[in-house]
Amino acid sequence: MPALDKKNGQTPDSPCDLGVYVHVPFCGNACDYCAFYKEQPRREQIDAWLDGIEKELALLPFPRKAATCYIGGGTPGVLTAQDLEKLCRMLQKANGGNAFDEWSVELAPATVKRDKVEVLRSLGVNRLSMGVQSFDEATLKILGRRHSPAQVRRAYDLMRQAGFDNINFDLIFSIPTEAPDRWQNDLREAIALAPEHLSAYCLILEEDAPLLQRLHNKDCLSEKNPDREAALYLETWQTLADADYRQYEVANHARDGKRCRHNLNTWQMHDWLGYGPAAASQCFGKRFCNPSNLKIWLENLSRERLFHIDEETLSREQLFTDALVFGLRLNGGISLAGTAKRFLGTTDIPATLLDFIEDLREESYLDDVVPAGTLALSPRGMLVADAVACELLRRLDACCEKSKSSHNER
Image (cartoon, rainbow, N blue to C red):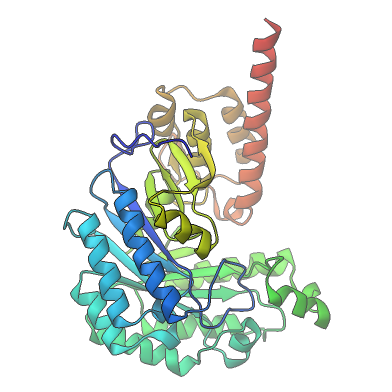
């Protein structure tokens, strides 16, 4: 891998926010809908992983103070309180002893113990995210989740008792075979507990996940249909808005002041560094990823070297396009002139983009309430945000190819 230019770590014209992501690849029980890289949490592997994180932090130091840190997985909660303390102290040291403005840790309900949440709180972690998914026993069984609704409530109580005042629940809807009123009941249960943040995801059936094959065998896939999913999205947005959860991204809703700053940093194409197997980074004007293999990751670190895959140098045009694509998913939208200035060095908007915006307006996909010059989707547009993003990419790519062809003809 070519040496990284680590002078300041910033992508073109990016503000100073830097995020850090740490991937914990261990899962005691793999959920049937999950296709992420994971390992069984054996003691010797956890110890080796912790040593690897320490080495990687030394080989790839933060180029400046990090504002946010997110420890995800996998299941970080399979680590003991002592493991979590060791990991957190490493990260504090890597950040020059500075506190992270927002420091999140993912926890599965069955892994939440008093000693773990207390040590996290004492070391400065100020946000917890819990994979609840559902409060319905039958639905949890379909998903292959290994916790009960009672464990969710016990875990939540322990988090509050430890002093956490910023908690997220992950929830999943549009699950084949679920009862018609199941999702509304889940929303009511979640709202009654009153976490500060709710992430509501439509189930995606990953090709490599066991759930897809199981549903194929039961001939349940016909229950997944776009009209039903659209109705569930609208129902979710309205129910959470009525409960004072403000939507700020297609799947994310928060009480005032509790939006996930780490995720916003990523969606807005700022810089982040990823540590651990399978972790991705965007920094130093590049994108790169660690191998999704604990053994290979450790072998390279033992030789005091970084091994990255899928590395690419980022152009200003690519970052501009990506900022638009992810900005479409944000309720506040994205400033066209501001984004063009940040990445392209000009406030001129490409004609192809202006034509695309007009087409979106004709389809009623644009929100006309936002400030002038801001590209934001209406609720109708939000329902097809992925399709809109794909069409945007297609048009910009076609424009780029046409420009190259014209240049070559000269």
